[in-house]
Length: 617
Image (tube, rainbow, N blue to C red; front, top):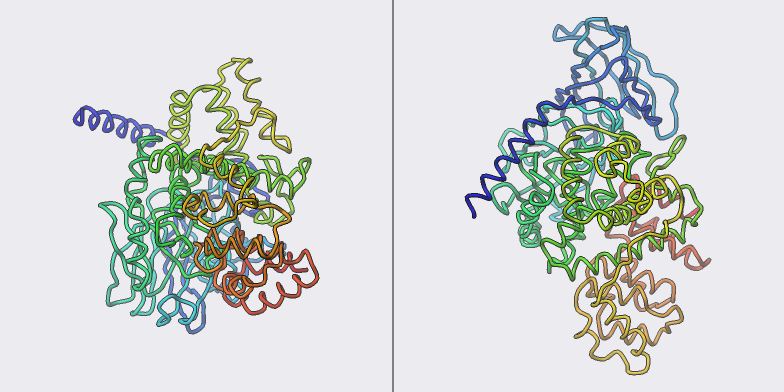
């Protein structure tokens, strides 16, 4: 059987390789409202990047050489740039000087970089340096790192911030390959969203190759005092020396996750899959940069209880990185599909009981977001309208959780076996392409619905995608483990909380218990629960976030010092928003929030600062 399985897998892999070779890696022709590029006239195909990272001036400088396709044989190509200093532009290997100009700035979007080219131009060389206003770049002092010995740099390009550190055609609908040469201080190491070295060299010069076409938001770099430990033959972890061992322990299932994902949805096409644990100022739980997922250190719970986040970022290797939303209006194609893949990987690794609990938690997140936004709010549609907005502002949990709920409806309507075959073929047939919601729907109707009106009416795809709120055919989420906790919620006020920590053990169970504590819970009851579970000082990142939200709402003051410490020590935007939004509901809380923000903002990522400033106004 092992030999038969291997031969079947080999045939599937070769089939996918042939399909990928035959696919025309087309660029979406849909207008991207968040990019100045005009790809129908002239488009980038490959980047050769040669840069130096200078921690003294906190700048990146060098040359971005773009291989282009001037399909219109015109005299201009347009790039996106935001806060960059463009020094000069030349054409071709011979570096022929040419003219360039910057258009008018638009908030969030920067300026169009308009470069004069010739009908036969195939390469454009842009000499530039970044400035202190580069939102994508976070420069950390040694004291802001885990080991406190060396400075650190990392980038965050999604959604429209790559143009603040590289002049590029910054649209998810435009894909390119890249090579890079990066010069850093000799005591530090550089890594990128590409093939990476596994140890420091003594020159400070690192080279990279990404031979799969990616969109610009997946360009990523990090520079610091890094070490590497392997998990298995194709997975491993980078982190600061004092952290790397903890990370390798925490992510011991990483290789098994990749294997499980392949069994579900076809071959992993990116070569290696490694993770980089960043300092606390990273603004997200994780970022799915190809070959090298960036992760928050908040995942390092010490008991492997938060590694489901890894399943999500790994899932992006199929949905998001392999098949990408063509515009930010279509972001649910990235996040909804990835949340579905995440849950399937989690079920394969951790079992069906875990999957059922995760389903209930997902529904709670979706329900809470619907209450916050309002059921008729157009931002609760899967297909968004981000024109004139910062696309980051439209990214709630709705594309994740409503998208996941929709795909569950489809799975239940056609059966898991048929849906697995469909989604695998969807990934294969659109590999390394960027598509719109309309592209997906066309493929969905042609390859799954196939004219079956009864099936279409059962699924209600267009209602899910184009209308606010959640359709009535949403699949119920039920967990017997959580039902037992719900029963405890009904009785603990009469029986007391002593001994409950022996019945409510896992992170999921504790989160569910906290989420449904009574709204009129008293300070004494909170103190009793805290004494039993040690949530204030002993919980992991997720437990602390949920518990602290209740503590703020109920003014449970024994937790206030720990809340302040927590909010200063992390920069995860979503988690911080949960707490700051709770604080600003009262005048006293708002004053406290502003005080914490002033202490903490120097350690927050710039995108986090921007978001929180709006909340505090």
